Length: 329
Image 1 (tube, rainbow, N blue to C red):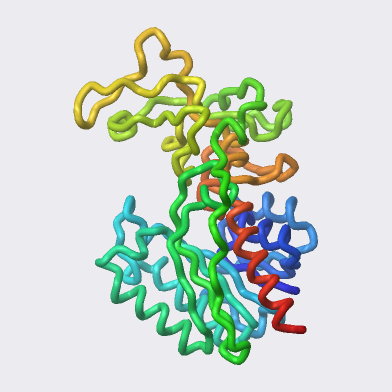
Image 2: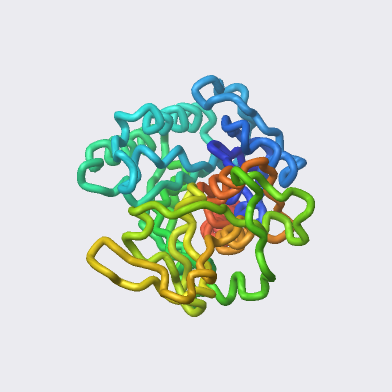
């Protein structure tokens, strides 16, 4: 079964769908810092590098499904939360425009939990209505990736629609019994290298690709909370900014000073470092042979933090694949 992917990023969602048996034949990504990574890891997928606003429906091949996560910064509780009034928030409607014209059997849209915030209720309901008007039976749910073989607490809203003539409504898979933790993901990785001056990559000199971490100080906001999870806990959410990367579990949890102030445990300061780009990729369940290409390590963190975890995507894609297969019998 064929899939077209929008807002593809580095391809976490695409990798999960391929793992479930789909073939991602076409992808769309506007950010030039990602193109080399996507092309390297998806050599058989045609990459369209225009903004979705410039993509006409006729440019998209006929496929069984359309997937993608329209930019989430405008819905994020951590960001300005402007929602549909933000230019990026409006990209949802370009996604729906193409969906309406192409009429694949299914679609999947992924977004941050902030889209469910009461202040976005009107806009979110309008988006759901547009999906319905495009000819789809809609299901949506707030899920934690940790319930689906991902060693990370990561809350995301998943919207799945089946074309109405299939007379089927998507039911979300049950959470997995085992919840993976940091030890499962990164315990076997050897010492990471600090990035070069100005946080440039070590490149090909790394024995383990992308196993390097951002250097530099920590902001007052960063130091206002504990940023260490222990080996037997899932990671904090991997974010798109390297400066906000969680700290490695080799360090003890940060010491409480006051409500908005923590410090590194005195005498143990040398244990505190950010997770490496490869460690973040492992936590987001990218395989080790998935290589990220960048000059600035910040771009490596960005690609991984914006991605849908591969295993999370796989569990949802697998359910869709089974539903469509059974429907064809």
